[in-house]
Length: 377
Image (tube, rainbow, N blue to C red):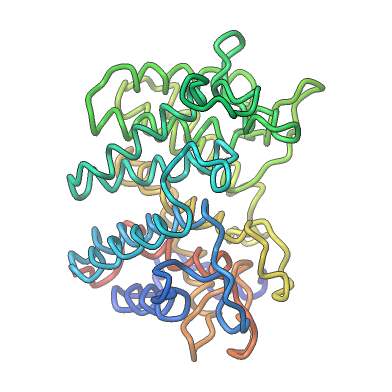
């Protein structure tokens, strides 16, 4: 990938057009959206009926919304409704159902996406489900309504020490970046949707805890999690991205420069530590294509959701070239029969080989939200 990156290292050399963006995204849907179940399948070319796991479907739901925002084409609104129906059937949006929802972050990815769906469509059903989900994660299951609840399922938020727990089971008691930063983002989306100051207060509270416990303000590194025995400083693209997005959203609301400094630091860390030698995005995950269940492939698509806030809304155009260079290489290395792209920005294997929706999502997601698509409609 590094040697290929040299071919795409010219400043301002945008190697994809608006039509390429539509081709990339429509090909993603053609190969990976399962019409019969109205959800995204786990992989193309794998000969399996497995579907993508529930939390990743939320990011793919975001991709549909971003396609509509870019194009104004009602076919994407129709796809959005179809996907929502499919996910309602497959996973239910009964947040109190343990058979589908047993981790706080799995719920919170959807809660934020559904709040965005309301902001886009003004369909109050999306808002109602999002608000109920936020309440469920924050406060837990009320014992008077659910006498069979898990004894520790009394609320994801820790009112004594701050921050949110990943879950309530024995193996989920850490306070993970993947629940805390998405909670800030969902709270900010719900604040925009409802103007309820309580959401803004919660966003500030959780962000402050996260900054103290999970964020190195000097290096921009975001820790994976805090546990009773210490902090796990493993860093990942999606935690960097949600930290960046949360900070940028708070900056836009408060104009507090500290938030913007944090957002830039988190993004700068991605460029410094999560890139090839030629500064092309290198996401986590195993490059072996037979490991199609590797959910880390979705991380680039999560970055795609929040980078426009920093670039467009906060005016930090210094990141355009980096995103552009990464997209160029990923699109160049696509499978030109299926127009599917890979996770590690390496060439996609033959069309007879399986390629997961997690893997294939990153480049089209980045293309959909890229701020300077050439020949934009």
